[in-house]
Image (cartoon, rainbow, N blue to C red; front, side):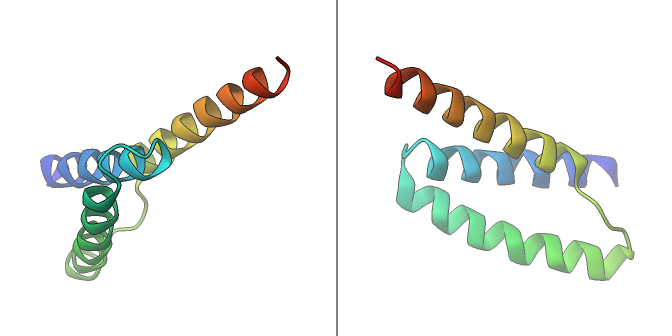
Length: 75
């Protein structure tokens, strides 16, 4: 069961990376949509909640983006 959560988390992180850093943006949006449905199905099927790997990864991506933004702004 953990491999499903890890696989879903990594796919969702790839989607977030594509959207946040505008790298294959269309693919990222489509993958994100598919993964949202996959997560909802997973939660309903297993009764589990929480996606710590995804939350931590999105936090890292956002932090990188904001740090990059502030460094460029201060130039």
